[in-house]
Length: 235
Image 1: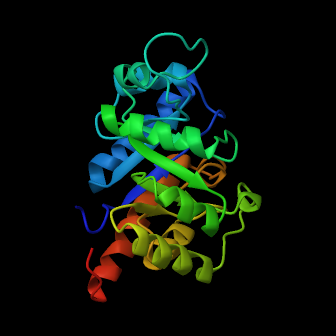
Image 2: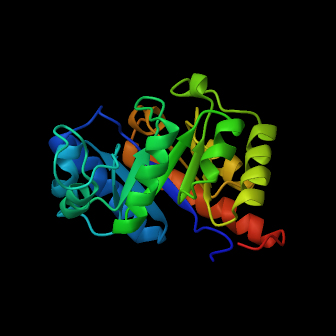
Image 3: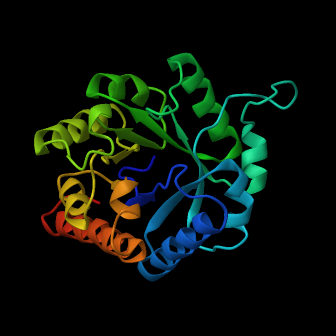
């Protein structure tokens, strides 16, 4: 079993961008991934998954949601095999803007693992994070819902508590802290405190130059990890 997940960054434009504008940002994220070697997950509308996958090389194209549906009936639901065929290799699950029942989340994580889709499961509290960790998602995003999009980050004790408790349950789960993340310094802080990765929406899209912000955040993840390694933590 992997003892410590690889570091990562999530570029999450949600539905602010689509089509050509989504692809343009994806290409800047792709350039950052190539330059740094960092794993960068890039979310996009379902209709853009194939477009972005066919025009990038290094990013992990990420669906905004997925269902546990099996091939067959299920009009309007998000079939895992169809997302994979289009080029998605990761999916967000249970985001605050697209919540799932715990039962459906558990089944969907299992389905994702069956077909090779990385799961980024969301929790709005440490208590919910503990419950979801039992399903062994690849990455667990714990963020207080009321901080999303505010530019205000959770305090340091929140990050260290999440890291300690989720590591104790399953050290192979990647831990993501992202609520209120705006700058590269925010990214550096949560990674230096023990998170495996971070990400942003408004912090990237509202930056003077989103491409520069992505590059800065990617470097910040690597700097935070490097300094933890230097302090003696096993990475």
